[in-house]
Length: 255
Image (tube, rainbow, N blue to C red):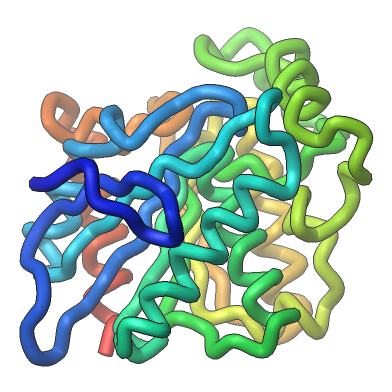
């Protein structure tokens, strides 16, 4: 594992094998509501995915609000993806994974890459993804007593700091609102969420919209889990099971 190198102009945590013929890369985007977080807490999951897939996992430290509001995070994620392509790695050997806000960011990056005319990667994964910054989901009431991690108030504060007046319904901020043509053109997507968390409907609704548009999106809803439980892959059997499902999905789609 190495830290301190740059990807897309940002510091990056590198986990797993590097270089070689047939190099495969997973670009993993950390969570934190766009205003906190770092690659460090993503390290156990990154290491697990690297071992299971044989890919190099890269976790960039993208810029955070409020100092760097929207669209800074999207620009950094897109910059990282673009640099991988410039380095000669075929899009079919790249996958994106994101946790929480990073899950929304991963899909936002792909939507922006589409607009820029860049080739799509092999696959994308969102873990408890935050895909709707309007916070209109009914799960905020339904799961208010069952989610020990997130609530509407904390996410509203994060959204306000990140958006800084930008439209919460713009697809680069809330991928849930991308049009059908854009959703259909995305690569295969896997979304995992806990049934008891307030972001569960973000995964459900995105999966339904992408599937209706003709895209391929698998949504896994897990019982007895909490927001981004996959990060505890070094200590929780349920996290190992979820991470293994992610690894199998990535292995299936990476060329």
